Image (cartoon, rainbow, N blue to C red; front, top):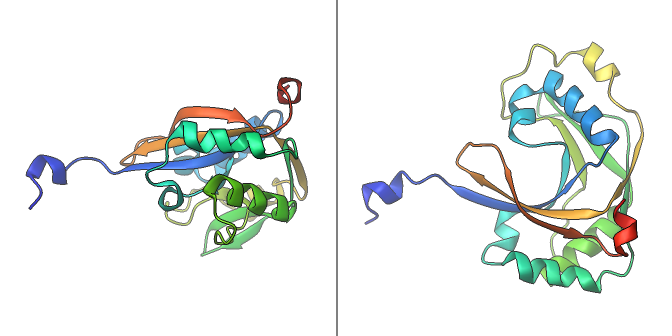
Length: 180
């Protein structure tokens, strides 16, 4: 039986994430603070690449060493108009680049049959209370189309309900000049 101190230890989660770079990262973060300030305070605008259950037991060095086999350079994803989900949730769905996204996941997970995970940008999460700013007017301010060039994969960690923190990051293919 676990000790009381073990039972009260905060849950630790790790994920591989693609943070949205400038200029769109800061713009989306400002919009997310209106649509869902709780989520915006936990993590910057991002696309989750691999979830915690998929990378359990993996080290950052092992995961990032696999990126050297990625010869396609930065990941290019395009997102379509915002969509509501589960009530007041709001996301931008991936409209282009999903096949490359899935190929990168399979490479990192070393699993040619890795489950499909739809690339998307969450602007408001339904697990959080609906924010006063999550209105049709705010929805109209969301980008209707967005093309991103993602150059970094980040390993991030969350302890309990605290904000996510960066553990390490690495380039997504290409040379150092591609990271500008």
